[in-house]
Amino acid sequence: MIDFHSHILPKIDDGSASTNESLELLTLSKQQGVDCMVATPHFYASDTNPERFLEARLHSFRRLSDAAANRALPGIIPGAEVSYFEGMSDCPELSELKIEGTSLVMVEMPMCRWSGRMLSELSAIHEKTGLIPLIAHVDRYIKLLHDKKIIDKLSGLPVLIQANASFFTDKRTSRLALSLMSKNKIHLLGSDCHNVVTRRPNLGEAYKVIEVKLGNDALKRISENETIVFADNSSVAEALFI
Image 1 (tube, one colour):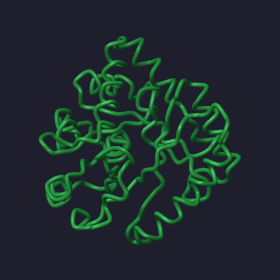
Image 2 (cartoon, helix red, strand yellow; image 1 turned 180 degrees about the horizontal axis):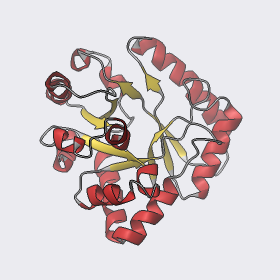
Image 3 (tube, one colour; image 1 turned 30 degrees about the vertical axis):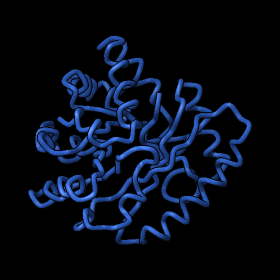
């Protein structure tokens, strides 16, 4: 089980506030059956540049890795949650922000109606760089933009979709989440955990809901998707496009 969206790296964004809290997040995730966690700290092009961000991420990653050494905790995979910005397809450092070992770059879309220009930019990322945008927490846009059909806007684009565990565990949204999963419109899952109080790891809870409602085949499909994206071959992952 891989958690594709987490803010477990200490003192780098609005996630974990300390190395000890990061270790607690890893421990809670392990208890739920998580084997690996993709660390996706926020990257805002308006606030920093890739070089400074990567330096800070490396420092935080090493601090946590050293603290977690010799403990039975999930592995940590460096990545980033890249806030959408105009011209990102022409950013030469974009490939350095991808999820390590994959062709995926996680993109956090704006919390406003998406224009044709924004959607074209997503296509351009793949066309120009070979990277595949992984749309972060699609459930959040559905909720905040009051648009249950927002995934339809992504249909035909070279993107993959990540949903948060809470989409499945919340009774108000679970039916929609399961419907989208059954139609192969959600590819990867994440907890989007930030802390041990208000935004705790919960991926295991989502897996239980999916298993009960959709069966083992759905869980197997998630595992197959994980294997495909870590093949680090964009042409293979293209088979998952919606």
